[in-house]
Image (cartoon, rainbow, N blue to C red; front, side):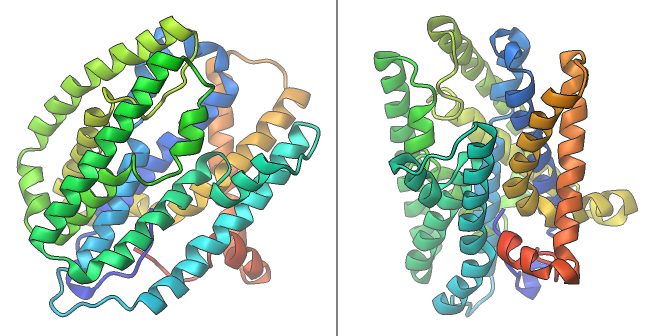
Length: 370
């Protein structure tokens, strides 16, 4: 979800990335809504089937971030200006990251009836409340990128990709071993150690490789249906292990970091990008699809803001709205969350509320970012 201005040679074919962002953020909103609204479904086969199926989304965002950065290095003579790079990220990522952490501290404290300032609060403020771990991990990848990009070549990137794959495999293996030996931990491992880049490394560096290698996406596009078949095959063991996790512990302590899930997450995210890349010309030729792609500019804002909107809606819903069937209530709250979040973002883009846009969104929306 990292936003960055593209060089002219790479700018022509990026609509598929925007569509991927839109799909990804829709899945994120649905997942988080389900987690708060229909918790009683977690023990059902429906949840067991859908939950792991949707877990390619955060890996997809990391792949996109790497891909967009890798596109720069296709241009001969490109050199990163580290100072301007981080000055920009200070405004677009760092400030919104800490601002939203403070927002979530007060929202969660208010809805839970109290604010507690302790070591856990400090940890969350500096590493990310709830889903904001994504931004914290992305900042780590951007630091690695800044340190390594001057050495980029096909061979160097292959070495980075190999080391990152090893890092992710080891991390996922350790996570699973701790789960099966120590038991469920209420997501403690994922909420703590998932905020480090090690587990996510293969996705970001795979994206860098895809962006850096001009023919990579073309090759993947030609084999997209084989990728889809591989994703389906990789999903089966992930599903089996997820179900076994619930049967053994009565809860899900690992959503992402199971070794059985790594191949599926990697292949499914890659397949979606290859599939959408193959539709690039049709996306650009269709007025409807181009409009959908235009909503990609809201992806970062929806990601950081939607959970705050969701928590408030659920809090008010439980107080003032009548009980509805779980499915209908889920759809209603998810739709409200998405619509109100986008409305809030558009409000922040207006001149009278410019300061909100600067602090909470990094001034996104004032100009088009790819």
